[in-house]
Length: 373
Image (cartoon, rainbow, N blue to C red; front, side, top):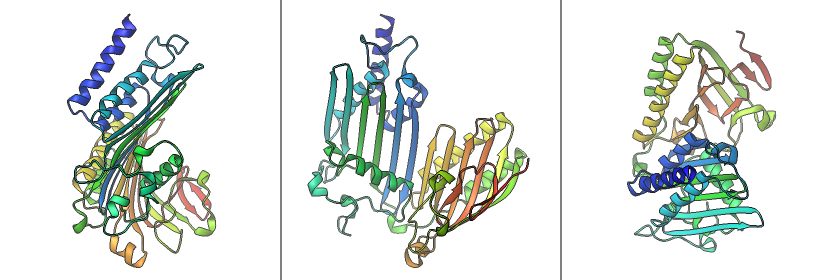
């Protein structure tokens, strides 16, 4: 009985949050507090602002105290509550497709919701055959036919990968949607993908990414915490190959003509766990504020739990006219050892960061030099 009451309270809380406009993003990010693994990305580009939330979980992640998956109740209560929440979202959606099967001991749940679409009233979802190639567009309807961007980046590559996984499947609500959510659950494992794209009204006064205000805060906090500082340099050429197992982060196709990357900057290490948490929180809030307030800058932010990165193109004109890619990049990571690692780089060309960047001082064409403690 207590389990049923707890479940009903959870469902009521979810529905209340939706009714009060608590926001789908906030709800999905809140699932991290219930055991799910949540990663978020935000983007500002010429023509659009975007947000992606990706949630993954297994039954052991989301089971409540004393809850077991057995023949009497195979679907976790939290999964049931997600379905109830999405039912509330469906009531406000342009189109909603739901499938819920419990056959031969196999539980399959699928949701595909177009929350906002195109047309004057954001109520026009294009059919897949009408939509065609997601990135074929004309200048007259570029936003309707695709989400126009200035340069290739991790956010756009995720969109491409998502589109490829949906080809041939019953995900009609995705095509042509400005805002959508997809939920899949099969026997203890599930994932949720939420994406939102809206027009960026600042595109007429669009300019490059400038991280000066963040740098000022970073320098002050690192000095205050007496952080260790290491000058770092990474050089990776097209001839070195694109082995993803050796890279922490890389791009391919940022500009035409070369995959070369040359990065120089500073690695900061804060050893006190208490200081690390405090400083991480301030840096994260500063990066979030940048995404909220600098809508005319070309940048991407990604975060998940105890990690975030912020990067962007410094000069849009040089990139689009002369194929010269100059970027700024910062990543902050709360390590399992309690330390805070912050890598701040200036990048020429593609991004290429070695796998073990927390220990690497130099990486030049495959040759590593490790930091000595």
